[in-house]
Image (cartoon, rainbow, N blue to C red):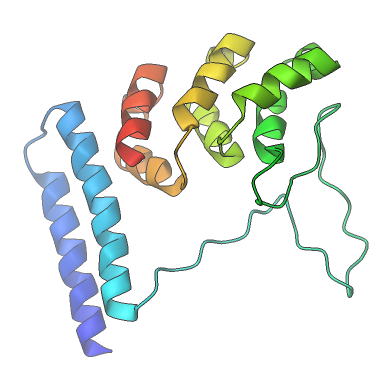
Length: 187
């Protein structure tokens, strides 16, 4: 236990010293933060053998025989239920995209085909995270939301983006170009 505590203190000191160092270019700073994120995960694995398990998403509580009355999550019109993570239909991404768009951009079959095509291999939490960092009017039209979906394609774990943006200032992680750089480095 003492070794674990000393390793965590050393890691904390290293990240503090890195953040106090002279401010490098934004690209270098982003890369350093991505490296820190993965170094912390590697340290966790080397000390305990397994990384910490992610928390289950709040909007999808697990159904159980003891609690059959869980209401379905609120979905925009025509948004399908989540496929359970087994590939196939990208329910969470479709839901995240439809929440960003106006009601009329997700209300017929052709719109849903277009949204579904944009959501192939895209994580819904990634779309939500990136759009929440931008201004409301920078992520409310199809072209913009589909561009965000393109940024999220291939990003398996949105926690890397969340970690890097939490370490940068609010204004270094609020435009599509800045978020594109972070997403590319987190892939």
